Length: 303
Image 1 (tube, rainbow, N blue to C red):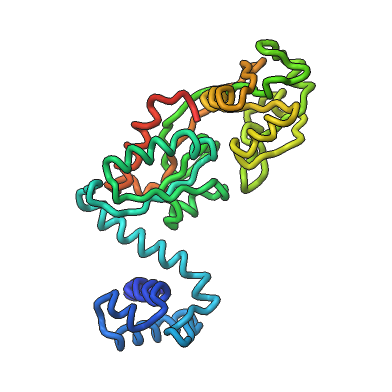
Image 2: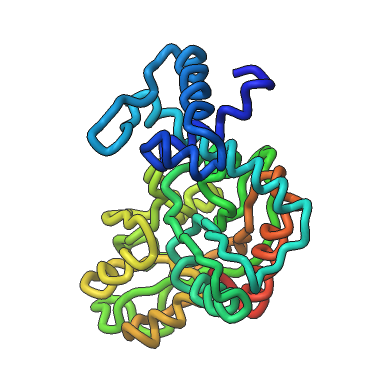
């Protein structure tokens, strides 16, 4: 698509979402013949019908379904540059802000973020997603997410990051564990017991595997959970132990009667970061969102 054909993108998106040429014309405030002419040009460019007639209007072809996410993201990114060039009035905004985060972030931090945002800007909605994919850059660049909250990225990245939380882990097991008594977890016991580990959705690697700690690499993991909330019931009904973020360990002790132990070997504190695409650096709404997360996170020890 040439530069002078970029104005076809909003027409494609409108037809796709309205599934009607006349409704797309009304939405765009242009004539239906102009929409038809633009669709004809799009068909020439992509060598595909794009939309077929249906009883209710038009329906997208398989090719249209494939390209719609990228077209919609391109249009949204363009709109965001217009929004960012003006002052952002949170109290009047009705935007939907999309955030992907670790399950423990979703459990512990996001309720506070929601409460703060809803009080300040009651018409703003939050759309929270689990971290399904490892390719943040693609998801953030295409506008699938506004922001990601995850452990600090390792290695080189073009994405922007800001540390919002930092803390340590505790070892947890059920209160009536047959071999581990309160205050008595040793390194030998840690190595001998079976473990529940938390894994990432996209590659099933355990979250703490890459820290270079021998005890973590040699754990006998017999249950890999996709998130902390999924791990808790397994810990509660088994003799397994698990590493849990410190502030969540307090919740586990209070709600489930877990034993909570210091980890019997050195494990470095971990950073949790806000992560975003550099194109959003100066987006007024995005700056505001990051500030709300920063404010809610400042009193927390960890995720």
